[in-house]
Length: 102
Image: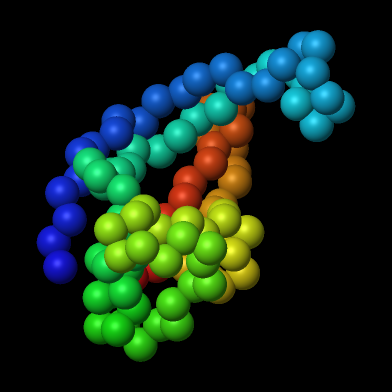
């Protein structure tokens, strides 16, 4: 299965809030490495084909329509080992990198 993706260039942005919750303070610059993202959302049908081809279990969902986008929380993905996030520093800026395991 080939999915169309577009490149997102590496860049920094300001994240947080000076008047938000404690875990949102202070406003700080975050660096995000370049990555690619799908042009469209992955449907249940497409994910089922991927899961079958890679011997992965299908996630439980309240939205089983084959043409509906896959609805799985980030926490489920991390628990299932389908993604990996690394946080480090580059030039004094927080660096967040997320890659999907294939």
